[in-house]
Structure formats: structure tokens, C-alpha cells
Image (cartoon, rainbow, N blue to C red; front, side, top):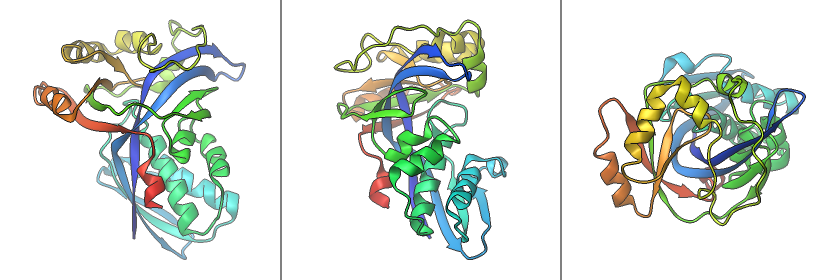
Length: 275
């Protein structure tokens, strides 16, 4: 049994710079990896079948990204082996933290290792991109500046920060946000700033707040303690702190209707160390 983490990410900013003919959006963002996330355990066998169980049974279905990633690796490489995968889900669903994408990336990395497929990182990232635009950053395992649809990555060494991440009780549809007619799609591209928070924004935030007032209320609460922003297409919001104690003090005052956690920003994924 091999147990491997699947870390969360934050989008420190998210600019939508255009829309392609195929419907995908061109963007600029900075992915900050966190030392907090889901956990997956893998036990391989010779059955050729992939089975998934979870502490949340309703997500262990055939269309889960974990199952789809494993089967994609099988079909791409001709791998004949199977696996029992156990997911311990800690990250909220539909929260903009990359939970599903990170789970899929960890699955590709772990099974590539366990099944002896011997694919290089770049090929695994290309496979992952077929399933989701956020998966390559987790395959490469580095906090990064991203462009294109999120697949053009430049590793970044970000300053050490602690983050309080807070999630209201709503699950956001990424498709709904990106298809909304009021979404800003013409932000002028920028060069890499010295620190990718100041002078930037999340172009999805205004639409998400209009559709889900709970997000706006959560931002208002968090802004009492530090500048706050939504990550991805939401619903989670975050604020950064210079030390763990300040972040945990704010967490201790979290209203009962919100969920939250404190995590440290990291530049290298623990998945790479585990494998």
C-alpha cells in the first residue's frame, strides 16, 4: 500500500485575457501550492480493474477524475495491472482549490510509478491536460506562473506565507462562471510581478459574488484580518499572513456557518518527495 498526498492550490490572482475559438479561455495566474490537501492510498494487483473508495462515498463513481486518470494511463500505455484506490477527501468540492485535479495528478504519478509505465513528467502532464487544465501544475509539482489555459507553466519560488482558507456553504460550477456573459475576458496581459497579489485581481470574483452572495459575505469577514481574495472560480477565499499564529488566531474566530483551515505555502509538491 502506497499512500501519497494530493496538495491543494491557490490562484494568487486570475486574469482572463481572451477567449479562444474552441471556447477555452486564455488566462494568466499564479499557482501557489499548499501543504494541505487530500490523501490517496494505492494497492496494485493483476486484475486490470481500477476500483475507488472514499470517506465520501458519493464521489467514488466511474466519472470521478481519479478513475478517469487511471483508465487513461492504462489505455495510453497498455498497462494490464489494476489498482484499489482509497481517497481520504479533506478539500471541499467546487471550491477552487484544485482538489479533483490534484487527485487526478497524484493518481497519474503514483500509478505511473507502481505500474512501471516509465512515462516522463511532460508526457504525464500532456495526459492530464486531456482531463483538466489545472492537472499539469500538480504533475510538475511546482508553484508556478501559468498562461494559456493554465498549461503553460513557469516555476516560481514564492515567499514563505501562511494562508487562512475559508469556504462558504456553496458549491460553485466552473462552467457557469466561465460561460457567464458578464465575465471579464479582456484583461490586458501583464509581466510577472515581484509579488503576484499586489496590483492584480481575480476576474472571476465579481461574477461569483453576484451568483453566490455567500462568497461576498465570506470575503467581507476575512478582510477584517488581511487582504482577501477568491481562488479560482470559487467558492473558497483566502488571506495570507506572515506567521502561523496570526492565521490561526483568525481561524479561531471563524463563524459557525463557515469552514476553514490554515496551511503554509510551499514551492515543491510533497508528491514528488513521496515518489
